[in-house]
Amino acid sequence: MTDALHPLDDALALTPDGADRYTGRTTPDYWNMVGPFGGATAATLLQAVMQHPARLGEPLSLTVNYAGAVGQGDFTVQATPVRTNRSTQHWTLSITQPGPDGAMVTTTTGTAVTAARRETWSETDTPMPEAPAPEGLQPLGQGLGVAWLDRYELRPVAGDMPQQWDGRSHAGSLTRLWMRDAPERPLDFCALAALADVFYPRVWLRRAQRVPAGTVSLTVYFHAGSAQLQATGTGHVLGQAQAQEFRNGFFDQTAQLWNRAGQLLASSHQIVYYKE
Image (cartoon, rainbow, N blue to C red):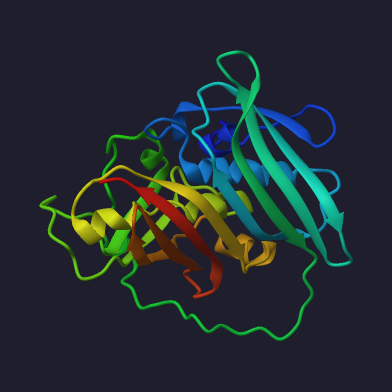
């Protein structure tokens, strides 16, 4: 056993810095090309909500707009509850950093809704697709070029990255894979928000061409409560992602994440920029 802080908990460490404000800093563990992995940025915004003393209930939705890359170093997170109703609470979110001239620059904006859920009739219209158990599938290797990929255990089921980047269009953009944090970590809302963004750009699969691409806006809907997340524990989550339309430099993506018991934990939608 070790008392070492999990890399995700280290990346999400925030220090209160006045009303509705927190300070944090980037870590190399979740670095992408020019900034932190977008899922880690989303999880950071949600972490500010989760540790806010005025929070009502648990996360219901999170929207993150990536205005620019978060630069290496310190940053400030603002999480303000702008309205609290009997069962829902609405938040505005942002991340800012000092620019080259010392003035604060906004890199990320967002909103969140938390809710006090109550037990009532529940059912699913999106059952978990059949998939072989993760233990029988080969995980992706380490050292794939960006640090954040080493922070996840990913076991592809279908729609893995093209074996040949030949520019030939594929029939579809569906990817299905088992996933969890590496090293293992009990699932919580922040980790789930990050998992919703682990899928590589759908345009890469559709075109078999590794064009520049980046998320512009991501929304995660949380269907599970803390009890379902605790029951999931450190187990694998089955994720599925697919695009609907590629047009004039942007495409959308919808995704779902289930635990091994077949419970839909979260769904997400995002709009992504791509370049020829």
